[in-house]
Image 1 (cartoon, rainbow, N blue to C red):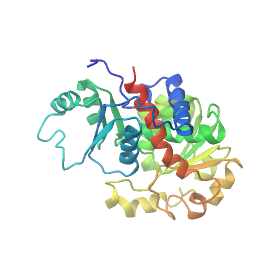
Image 2: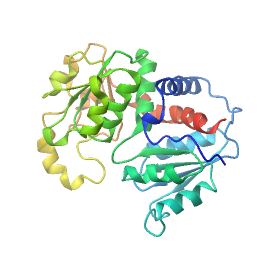
Image 3: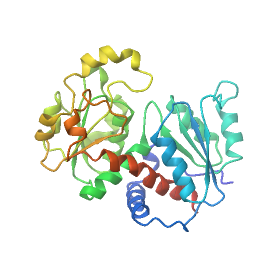
Length: 301
């Protein structure tokens, strides 16, 4: 067991070169599926879910199967993270039996604490602060459709949430500009904004943020666990919807992305999400391919 494994708790665990390598490798794996290529034969991924998921579970589980390995699904009912046992002990014990651990949790520090005590790579499958795997997929999708994103402009319109934080980190690593339009009380956290420096600009309307954008992205108004805030969020976000007018303000060949699940008619109109500029289905599928590239990167010596 390697006592200094590579982790993926955040995009910032990668260099710019490594990020681009994983994107290109994801594209390669997608276009050349070889059933005989099984670099993770006999390896086991433990998938710990405090929050349920469709895409995260399917993509990691299928990815391990393609690579000749296997994945263990541990639901909230199967694990008592930090309740019956300290995170430190959980990390030490689980990592002694598996080759990699993916966590989808509420608190970001659950993932960073796990990484601190795990003897195997730890992957952030989503936390309240970041969603780095989704950014790998989003960026693979952009590269496939439009080439390298360096020097381009991305408009984030909506909640300054975990996705927005990961977009701020991606902007820094891949050298693009992020335009953000969020309601005043739903801005991204200041530490993520200041770390992005010159890569981020704020706008007080979606239309202004979308001007010159090569990619427009949004997320649901109320994420999992925030449903009780739905009413107040509906009021706050009503002017932060991606619709035809917003897409018309962006560059003529701008793409639209959404990490799904989407609420058509709320954060995005049906005509946009189901329209010609939307790449939401390849984007979702790319979770599989780019995470295979990530697993290979973390686990293949």
